[in-house]
Image (cartoon, rainbow, N blue to C red):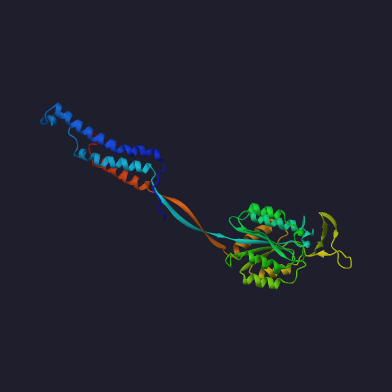
Length: 338
């Protein structure tokens, strides 16, 4: 417990507390005046016949009444003896969204296309998060981080909105490069608390998923892979300055169909202790990602400190009530005269 200087809830009541010595002085002066008045009125031997006898309690009345009022005022002041530092542990996931931005993500076998669906999955998942930290890595034949771990979801949505397949000059789908970049960004996060949401079609990969799985396991990274696109596939549009110029063809001039490679994505998930999720349904996949994140480990514990005021009013109030109760019980004549 961290004790700080004494404080009060309402300073206006201090005036009443400061008046107590004045009231006490006036009280005794009044008693002396009453005694002199009785002596002047009649000789002391006639007092028993002329004046109603007071209870024996009368002489002790100020001794109890003054502190009773004082403690009552102290209770009203809402005295606070400082603050108590309370520590609570909050589980916080550290989630790196790793997004495939290879050209095959432009395929339109899901609407509006694989990349836009993947971006929407990321945004919708973040909307369902609370205090988790998120970061973003994009990859194709190479990988780069575009946002470090943060709880600023608004900034994250801004970054996500700017992701395009044209960001990467080297094409392909290299899971190993993605994991290497992710591991670098996780260097200050405890192993076992590192979680990845890998969103990809798995198509045209470099065959490095086994190495990527070994790296993920050695780095304590749990991969939740989300597959977008269909296994039937679709042509891959080719754009120049935003204009559709045609579709990707092979060496013989035949249009290439890009198909989702589910097996590679499942291997990434199962090999790292994660889960595979079909990402073609936006609402279902975002909910499943949240469930998978909660099941894949408790996350890292973060100690949150808060200051709670330590209040004393209840003790002063209890003493005041006790004194007033004694005044009531020990005064059979209910004599409030001084």
